[in-house]
Image (cartoon, helix red, strand yellow):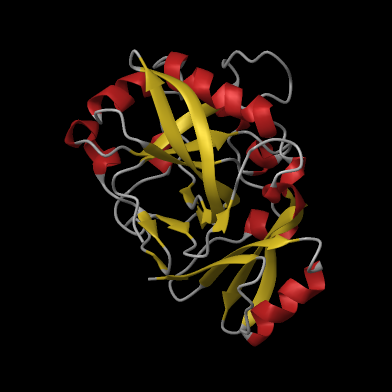
Length: 274
């Protein structure tokens, strides 16, 4: 399953503490926000338009990560990605209708001098990860299917398993439900090309107004191991979005260690670093 017809966006700074851990907080010092927990920007990672330069490269994979040639600081970024149908009126986004969600890896290279967030996010094919195990989402309001899900992530090297991100509830995102939905619509229509952010309305126009968007809604905080350990060739990156009412953290860790997965209430993304 590919999403080459859809536009790809990600939410920056939607989980308290992540930007500081990733060394990216200073990138957003001059970004104006309405409150302390508001996300910093909506960044593009894929634009289905040849006018979009490197962003026109389709980066999503469900099984592998190909590092850039100069990468020695590549990290897993465990997230939830939501597929939305986009409704336009007079070339403005007026509605985002949720369709489904899945485990996502917003795999990022630490690039201190990058002018735009997107420069850290798409360096070619097999750059980011999305699970093939999608879970239906009938709304994005309080009480929706996503509310009971949690996000876990693991790093495996030479058979040794370590937790990479903190096991986190989806409802612990800073902006969620209607608040996040409304903010994303506003950014898609009004975000300017300034600082680390980009003009998303221009990208939508250049892509002839795609009917769908994949939006990753923010990376969780790292464990101490995740904050200080980077991906190497041969490593396995695992992100799991799971039903926290059906499974506990130990259940998921047992699935990872035994490689025995249930498809019921679990979205699994396993990628090998090439």
